[in-house]
Amino acid sequence: MSSISVQVHPERGGKDGYTVEFVSQEGGIAAVTLPPATDNLNRLSAIKYAKDLMTRLAVAAPDEESLAEEISSRKSARTAGDTGTMEEQLEKGLEDTFPCSDPVSIVASTVSGSKD
Image (cartoon, rainbow, N blue to C red; front, side, top):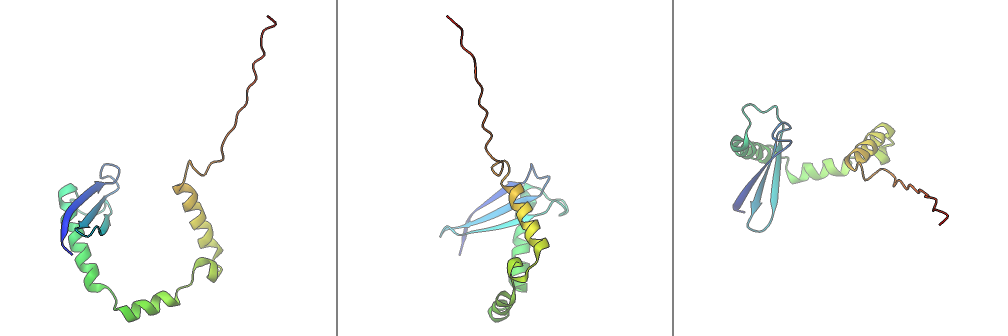
């Protein structure tokens, strides 16, 4: 897969870090989110940091067999009965969908007409 374009998106003007997207000829996208704590991070250096991170992750990735075992052994918060995690997930979902999660407010007003 050869990268044909790289897009860098500053999160809140770079204050919350950067997201670097590598777009392939086939239309595949690999996105890397870099936190603002990365030293000397700016629009140009974000590409270098993202490439370095992707390389380290690819080398350190577990083999397919151990990854399949890990995934099959994981339980969801619902299956595990972890109500604390489920509450956190609900709150995060509500925050992420705000203000869409607010109920619709309907206000009806009446104006009395004149006697004419």
